[in-house]
Length: 199
Length: 199
Image 1 (cartoon, each protein chain N blue to C red):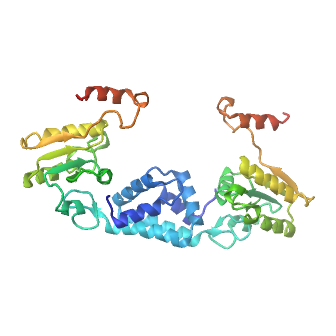
Image 2: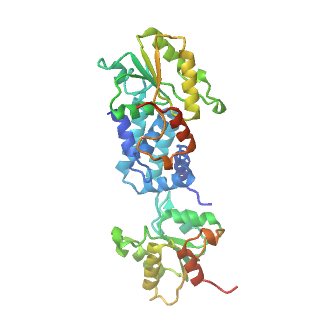
Image 3: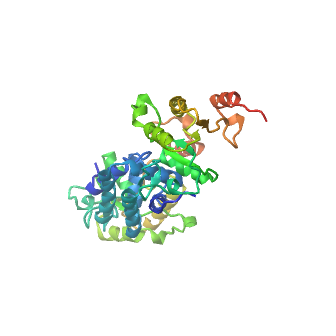
């Protein structure tokens, strides 16, 4: 068996990353070996800087390099609307779509009892405090439209039903925009029929 | 557009790696953010150690943490046989197959004029010097059995034809061991018929 301590260690560490198995990790390690030393250092330093400087916003849980994120601090944004998402990356996706001007709330995951993720490990309490403290008028539930995401949306709707002044909405789901019936699965078509709207 | 300097920088550096696009890089960066700091440091330090300590053997071009690799230094190995491969990772693969006891020579790629890889950027000269200096009896050509690999093998056979004392062999190709005719492409079946042998 061919073994080189530093090489094996690097392959082992790389293969801890999601979607990277032993073979891909070996390929990456060989690529790193062929890269310029300064490019490799740029990579490792950028990972360390990411870990040192980027954290989660104290209010909404999205990514920031300060205590409070730029969205929560922005005075021009609509402070009466909160869009609830599963993960911090969803905030980036919605921001890049370009037309949403409200606030966010990152749950930190979605309810999935089989994986041990029950409502108490997600940040529902913090969302309730934000609703009680602020002048919130609308909650947009933007969890993913799959089984766990729908469960989370349903749970959220239930705990928010006490707040009668709140308008609770769910992002539109159905056939993917730009797709064809032919390439959609039965469940998507079923849901698209169920959620049909007058035009 | 959502922007965080350190986050974007890390995504940019990660997406330079092979097979990692912007989306995968973003997913990796978010995963790194959620990892323990000590695990992240273990990763970056292992990459730096790889870059600092692992280099290419002065004789054969395979990976080593010393000047000369453990295979070239090993007195028990058969010094009369050289297995020629494209990349250092191929040495690892052949070593792990468990039964080869000769030396190696890493070309550092394969002839591919369209990508600008002509014979002079590969280590053919070094192989010739090794043959002229040492007591080599057999050269096993183990480049990959695809178009560029076969071209490289053919070129190698041509430049070695001056050395009449050399036995030049090519690794066996045909249908993949363990595969079915049904799942093999026409070219593989054609080659398997061409290279048939008496049993």
